[in-house]
Image 1 (cartoon, rainbow, N blue to C red):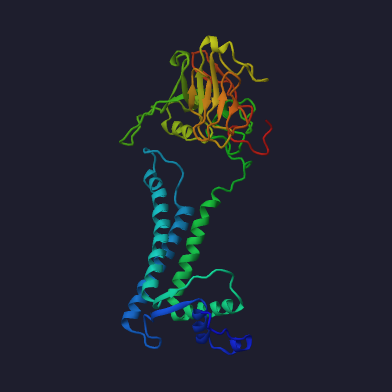
Image 2 (cartoon, rainbow, N blue to C red):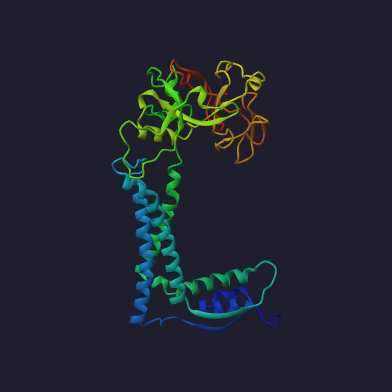
Length: 395
């Protein structure tokens, strides 16, 4: 290319688009070995119409699937349903339908793009010599001409149906891709009715039902520490009065043992559906640990929480205070509670204080007691937020 003379600015202004394209290829060190349009520019053949319908079909299908995703995401019944509940079949289809529609839309756009490239972009074989350094004014001007020429020779501009399908598909897929982010936007202080999940705010859980200062103003309920029996009913029919959680007595847990427990209100005994709601509560899970008597004597209790344990029994939230992973690993010899996600460690003998890893706050302790029948119960609510730290927390 050293012998090639670059035109002046005045000469560039007088050049046609085709001349600029030819110039641009020469300046880029490109040699076009072969270039052939897919279809004649003036005559529209049946084969070309079939190709256009094929590509339009895939883009239109992508638009329809993306629209279906949006409708399903907004309108399909997604609240949890047990096997024995009405509407379980619709609930079970929610996630698969989201996957099929969004995945199908992306796949359809991909197939349409490949089909368009194979059937409408001119067949071209070129060889280019690579060079270093930035592009000059001539290169920048010619590349614009080359892009315009590529647009024209692709014939996409005169195929209105295909353009409409492509635009609709791209727009709807974009909307479908960002819509799930809307489900993550939530007012952390917007309250609803107090349930076994809490009232929707960050300071409440299912254990708040046992609080004497409930946000809804209602009296405290009796809440047992419920152990998950993993009981299932494959036929979908749960016998009347049979639950998933069961109450715990002191003798049910050996010294040095750990049991995951969930809030079990006295009003929900034998209610399988309510038990499943409790287990699925995002911040409900608690570790019940029974220390050996000699280890209990070494415990350093947190100020204001000296009466939260019951003898050798201590209950701490399973939700790591780093990013809410389940801290369900317990080393009896070192008395360390471990989080498997980012290796945070908490010292059980010192009010579950973090001693290693990124967690910066102790695991909240649940006050517990034993009722007159010998069952372990919550003696109130957590007095600090459960889970990761946030800016409004007071502890």
